[in-house]
Length: 429
Ligand code: PLP
Image (cartoon, rainbow, N blue to C red):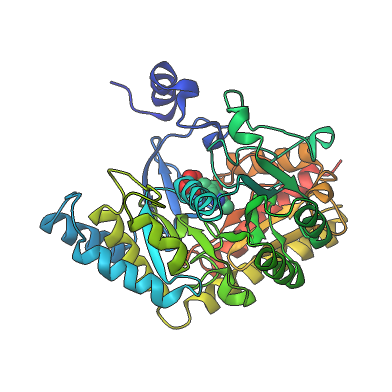
């Protein structure tokens, strides 16, 4: 049977919808990856690619990091799924997270970021006895019906119900209110006009689903004060920011402590872990049965290999200097990008935070979703596609963030910057 990129792509198309596990895995080129190591991916034709997609941000230590692989292997030889009582690994993982995350009196494990945000919202609704939740335009919190709306809305759908796809149950979605990011007044106005109605406010403290729109510190502090005043649960969705920017999440950087927080992606180097963390008086409902209980089921919650990956990842991230080096690599990329667009006179700008980076194809401020409507999506897409052709793996979708891992280094970044400079030069109108 043929096993080159083209033949494998044809086989995939025959047996999987679109030949992929989701449309956001589209690369615009028929590469079929068969191996990954450090910052590199290898396709079925034997080509090497530099990876800036990093498994949607999950690969923080580079691919197949030895520390993770060894611990997962050792645990897999000792134990597999039990599904009863608490395992020693669960206790060690939970104690580690409670030590690191400011809002975490207690934690619970699931298998993805979407599950974590689903359970956070269900818990907030149960604890408050209220229905409405607030999310922000441009934020993404997973695929479930409570939040799968108003992510990349066209201008005429902003502020209106804009589901990400068909099939979403309007009865579930209608209780989600969408407000503008970085606008405390809008949040205050809504909460004041609907006293006793809002169960939760859920927010990405850096909106990496808009590329990299950073919440003003004052906005997060205002949300903290307003939600406390209104008896509303404040949820930080740290599925991207958690462990990528700091071991305690962005909450530990900004100094604002939410009631609940969700984590996933980078915490377990590509193994499926979602985490719900929060205040003891909320979290304890997950351990109850009967009156007031909130059910957080899941056969695969906290599987031993996933928790082994989590512990090994945190162990590596705790090495002194890890975040300093990652942030320095991010700065090198951003500074290099700024110099290139300035030199070429392209109306674009570099953005990002820490190890997250991207190029926006517009100039001027970016503080809320509306600002991103100025992005030249055609130029953004053409740029990404050209880089994918040259074997730099970028998601070929406009505004998508890119990642670095601890396996990337200065030389690789400089090589990438050279390719970016040539590409932008060639694409100049
Ligand atoms: N929350 C944020 C901020 C995300 O970016 C994502 C995924 O990209 C999710 C939640 C959903 O996580 P998952 O894809 O693991 O379900």
